[in-house]
Length: 451
Image (tube, rainbow, N blue to C red; front, side):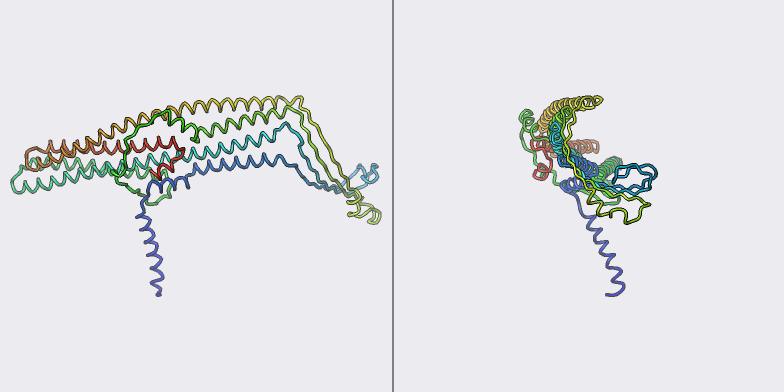
């Protein structure tokens, strides 16, 4: 391979990769999967869950005995006690000690066990909070995705309106050139083309803005090309069904993470109350220690004192102990901890009740919105079909000169409004259906990926 080939090959490969990246369009599943894997707020929530895991592990380790080793070295000047003779001495000396001690709480009012249970429930609440934040993110992505579809639909409808006007403009110009139409009619149709081009430009910019907003929500790298797959709108099926709020709430109240998280917090606070009460009762601890040391007078000759190893062996001592601690007065620390735990429990109970009321209201409104939206969609779809036939008839009359530009423009505008209203009600109904389906499953992924 020549030197030129070695230089040009990487460049062609890079251009090919960039072309492939530009051609890739994102589906709804792609957007959701990327957002769930890369969203910074969701990653922070995961870190909080990991913190709860660390707290749980620490509470379990508190059940084990402690084991510590220590050593110190000193040089004594002036008055001191000779550890060999236990007499006061004024000689300079060197002392070195070693110790190993252990301690184990035999009984502490079941504080440790209740703390473990409390942290277990807080970890479960953290996992549910992860699901809550993930679902909120998916809802935002879902809403913006369909907002892009709606903006693209308006853009397509505006482009179609512009093409219809340009088609008629081309026909009118030819007729004016042959003397079959007046020049004023050409000016009228040119005015209509100009208005339609403005509408299309606005719709095109709105679609680009919606796409940019989606890109920002996904937190893509700057400079990344982004576009979505636009599905066939007629393939988005609309089922003729209604929903009952009570039956949906009965299912939702047992599976949604937004309720489970508070329920786990409530149970954790109950265990925290029990753990705080454990500090009221006496606690018993047992332990043991091993101690040894070395002592040397600096002024003495080496042979006058025992060696280092001999002293460590001869000075060795062991001890075991049992201690009883009876709480009498601790500056209201225990009472405060119990009261705070009870307040947190009461607050969690109120939040749970408040969340249940809010959930039922949301479900009831969602069912009403869906039932109302279904009727609106059916009416909008029927209106669109009627206006499409009506416009076809007006267009033929316009081409034969039976109606003027004003009537043609009015019919075209009416058709455009009917088309965009049919698109809006269809997408709106799909989102409302997904929302209701979520209340009966607890997670958006299964609904969206299997819709």
